[in-house]
Image 1 (cartoon, rainbow, N blue to C red):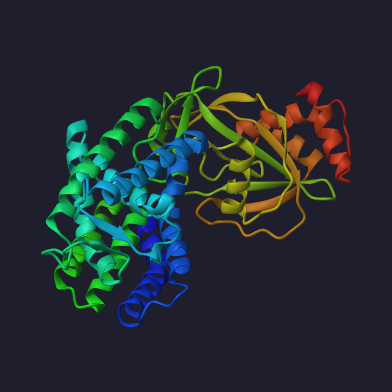
Image 2 (image 1 turned 180 degrees about the horizontal axis):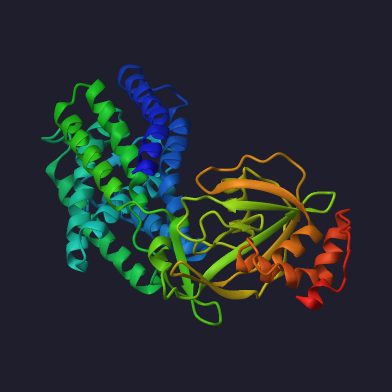
Amino acid sequence: MKKFQTQIILSVPAAIFLMVGAFFMANVPMPEWSSYASAAAIVLFAAPSFWVVRRWLGWRDGTVFIAVLGIYAILIESSAIATGFPYGHFDYTDHLGYRILGYAPWTVAFAWTPLILGSYAVAANVSESRLGRVVLCTIILVLFDMVLDPGAVYLDFWEYQGGGWYYDVPISNFGGWLFSGFAGSIIIEIMISKFRPLLPTPIQLSVSAIFIVFFWTAFSFFAGMEEPALLGILLVFGMLMLYRRFHYSFEEMVVLVDDENRPKRTELKHIAHNGYTKLHRAFSVFLFDRSGRLLLQQRALSKQTWPGVWSNSCCGHLMLHESVAAAARRRLKYELGISGVDLRTILPDFRYTAEKDGIVENEICPVLVGVFDGSLRPNPDEVESVEWVDWNEFLERATAPETDISPWAVEEALLLEKSREFQDLLSSKGVSLDRGDKDRTARA
């Protein structure tokens, strides 16, 4: 709920900007350079949903997924221009950019794809049936078009021969959207069955569609087109409610793996951690300052696992399709307000299990080391307190019989102490550790 409210608040400036833009487009003649502005706006509208596809499917499969849908969109639009099938005879003007081979503008790939992604996201979260998803996706896509097509015709983005009954849009156009949407939905189902994503279909795929429909709703209102405006209001409200209901954070999805660290499935963090926690991906960071002190953090008292326990600088879980280094940088910024740290993985294969208060940790947890001398901005939702501790003092504290240090940090510290690569890394950064009692690790 809190995250949803935060996202709504952050979206307010964008919504105001879109409303202002819609007002001027409805009341000011299009300038000669409008094709460049329109093309840029279409790409910007598509960017959020494309970013979500990357998080959902990864770079390779996500790129293929978007490319197939974009090519399909251009082909189906070009067919309609050349033959009249399936939308009826119409033609684009020059407002949407260069037309490929004189038919559909290149921007069609960026305009249509986020709409079907949004339609499919809603359908996939509402229906568990494949046929149900295809049918519902198609219907939602047609409803989207009933909001944006009148505005696009009003602005002379495209025009239909002979006009039509619905703000100069003929009924054949909506029949064409039923056909192309149905076929596009089947294409999506085929690709998903091939890619077999380990994450649920994210409702976040609808973000671009929400903004697009919101813009054309505002435009219809300022242009005096009541029906598209009313339909758009209902669609935006409905999508926001579904977004609130089905939204999940990619950061909260733990990646469960086999013994070879191959992903098997994903699960919400608070569900994955229990008395029988399955093996999953994580990481651990040790940060030192130039004087050789280690940054420790006390975990927030509100955390599900090991609340209030002191541990190394930063720990966390990897998102699906995320590297260890990227995950570490992301969590350092989120937990401690730190960025720009050069991290090196010293213990790439570290693995451990630990238990506290009936909750088990069972992780493949590479250990990264870095040097940092800047200021900290701890996140109170994650960090209760921080302190810089001399390395030898930390080792003494970690190996004490009644240590207050997390069990994984203890194991990691002892392995680092024995690592030549660890010592060479700190030396290369100008960090000198007082070796003190060299027999400590042997006794431990």
